[in-house]
Length: 287
Image 1 (cartoon, rainbow, N blue to C red):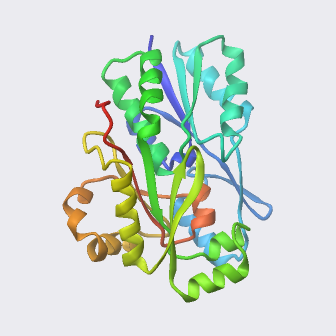
Image 2 (tube, rainbow, N blue to C red):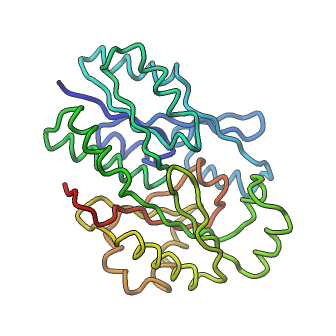
């Protein structure tokens, strides 16, 4: 029996990529004041950052609803498919619970996985699920494979500014001012489904050193598994500059990776100028 893979737009999988992979990406709702948009559908990452920088409005995001998941489940089941739904971490959003609530009506035809990830770390996990499916695995086999490897997925990100963490209420104004004056670059990962600041480095070069140290600590990058680069803002100039200036030793390996513009879910707090790498560590599982 064929099956459909569904995820949410916290994965930052563009709709055109979703069509290429033959999956469904459910858009998170993004609000600027009274105006509501669908992340990646009616609001592109570039448009999001234009509004974030120029309107002075702090955006809000809200989860995909059970009704919206139910609509997509029904389409798949009516077409004779089962569904594997992989959502952003339940630790940061109610989207996983929405997906589970909607699945209750489908008597085992829908399997929901809490990725314990979001942003481009969810992107690479969904990409792995697609590879499993395309190699002929069933929905149950693919779900088992994803569950087996999801704790090997990591994302390491360097934020360019503390300003949007301040606007989002994550840090105080005084902390943001002091950090910006000292050129503090937060180095951030996702651990056990939650955002974790692993370092506050002074300057981009030291931030990269902290990022490389993190990669070593988790066991290095499994280059046989999906990896991805991400950036926030209206272009990837900061990312390409970051690699050329500070990551020359990795340039050959990074050059061929997918580069993904990060949207509203993370962009609300990162602001423009953040860069990120998602990867699987060197465990035993390969595809």
